[in-house]
Image 1: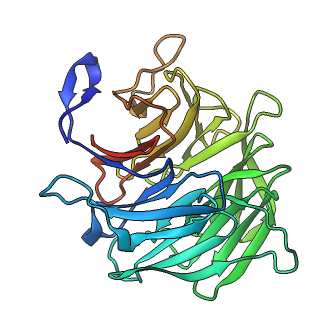
Image 2 (image 1 turned 60 degrees about the horizontal axis):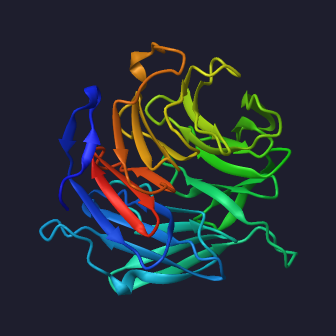
Length: 341
């Protein structure tokens, strides 16, 4: 634990509550549990450049203020997983499930004695070749529905209950790098073709291009869709230190550009409880929280963040807890850190 330097507005330092877990490997994928009764539980995936990788589920022991090792909840995963999500079920009415993407989409059942694979969802039935999945998103309005994005230019919507494909769309001209739900029937994706596109499952023949990166042939890497106000999305170009905030009612023109990172941004997360706040992090070792309600863009290089945290190493991953909005988790090197904001 201990306190750390989190620079608040006005540059003053405030002591922040912080917990660190050191994994035996580089951490890549990571996410919070959503259930109210498992508040301080997270899952993390290894990044090892070989077939055999790991996923681990850990929980904070609040009294001892640390993450005890849980060998029963560590399991093998083929290749590094590109994303991890717990079922977005706050009430805990569904099974306790975890999903991972990599070569395929897998759903895992979490029990007291360990973690067991429930389903392996593979849509390439007739070929030995599989196009890796870059990301996925689990619908919060329909827990049986998961959308995946793939290097083969498609997005696939799965029905987890029936374990069948609900729909598969050729989403982009090049690899799709991220996907996010914006409503029960609506999702968006970003791609190596440099576009943000919105799809409606009720009209699969059409998509709407919301934004295209101004630099030709520059991929868009990540997409965040604001759950509190679905008018807003955020994305960033590959190797760019700038995050672009979009209003889908005003396509092609960003409503804000967040430019205070000093190196490439790797990850972003909208606040789960507020439509105005977003956190971004990247290779400058910084996690920055922005308040977009100020609206005004002071100066040539845009607005300043309201909070800044320096992790001391490049931040590869960032997730804002949906059940406890005052906690943000970041991953850098072999470390997972949870920060009280």
